[in-house]
Image (tube, rainbow, N blue to C red):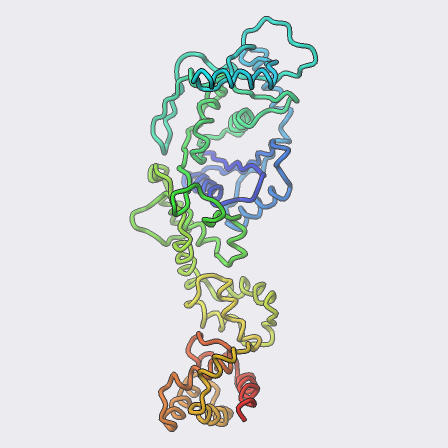
Length: 462
């Protein structure tokens, strides 16, 4: 059975690259009716925080990437790691190294001066020397000296690394805590991981991890190293490119299904398909279709995709998402029209939930138009038509066709074009110049509130 894992380090938020890795690992497991595991690699005690752990869990939950097992925490598995460390020492496959930091720094300087690649010279590998007093050793893995590691990567293809290029990796620090590369190996072994899908920045770790697995006579998973995500300028993705926390996209009004759809296409393709749901993605997904080249993050494309999802999202769900934004903007939705009707009117015109909320504000509290816009659109020529419309508005049936008919009759009587009346009415009632058709807006705002808003502004033209 296929078993995949997502194994973030809680040293920050869940970012775009991590979310894509999680998505691909999740989808591969779902595609093959397998198991998806969440593992938190929290051995970096200086940088790991509870806040980061929670941010990862929140991000996975918001994206809807449910895991079948976990979360497992490496810090809770220390006894297991130490037992395997001792096994490797007992079998002569690992050794204590007493080289001091000063010795290693001097070695590196000498190698660099000689034009050599800096690496540990294995001075304690088979040493019979008496260990120095008072020095706490690290534990190093005895990497094979001959041969090569062959990785049949499911994305990159065949990768061959000579063992002569690898040094004896530190697998436990001087305080006894195991290192990242060692913990990952034991976790993947114990959790029966069959497919390791991760960023290609881990590719240089893979030969080392394979050699440790072989030393333990453990089965090897298959590896798939996914190319990095770059900014639009080809540089490594950073905050200036939009590489923020996944949860920031929630705060900015993106839908999780839109973000997932975008991430799925960021380095993978199924023909020319652009918009598809998770079920369709799982059906289509395979590792062979992942590009071997880095993908470029395009915020405009993500925004467009979010717009496509907003258009087809149920207005009841959007109402729930819009509510916190409106409350932050001092709006009480109980005092205005039914929010679902407002959203039906607006959602074709916006890109995000936040924009949708901003566009809905004037339905729930009046906005004050700028004096400049008032002066531009409420000219002496227009004011009589506005007054007549105001007087007759209280007498018509309150629906969009009746409001529209009244507007047409008033502009005809005053020899005006329709926009000459529509624009000042927009300003008086909404405070904005860009809205859906004004008759539809007035219908939703309601007769009493519409007349109240018009009257409040028209007093200044008495």
